[in-house]
Amino acid sequence: MPAPTQDLCRKFDLIFALATIQKPDIQVLQRATDIPVSTLKRQLSHLRTNFGIHIEFQRTSGTHGGSGHYAVTDWGMIEKDRFLAFWLVNRPKPEKIKK
Image 1: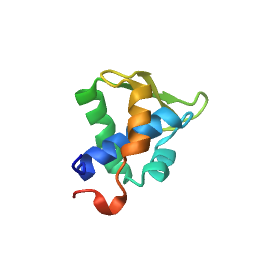
Image 2: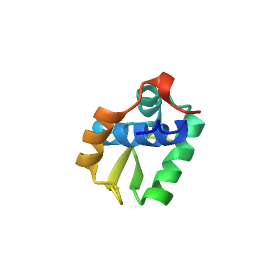
Image 3: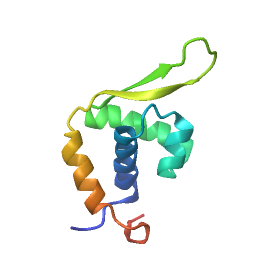
């Protein structure tokens, strides 16, 4: 299998994080994926549009501003369990990712 592009790896790493981390906020996603916050926001939009994944930002009650976490309510075209099994085995080492 040819090495996936950096963009595809980022999308897959983000999907993996959303599937495996309970109530992740943007900082947790950034630490888990090592993707810059501005890129994370763009990737979240791409996952919604291109993969049909319904990702909601659920605000923390009683707080002001952008406090809250992300939750997937529909995996769209992704079969979550098969994806997780695939990415655990096939995620390339960082030096093999095409830029």
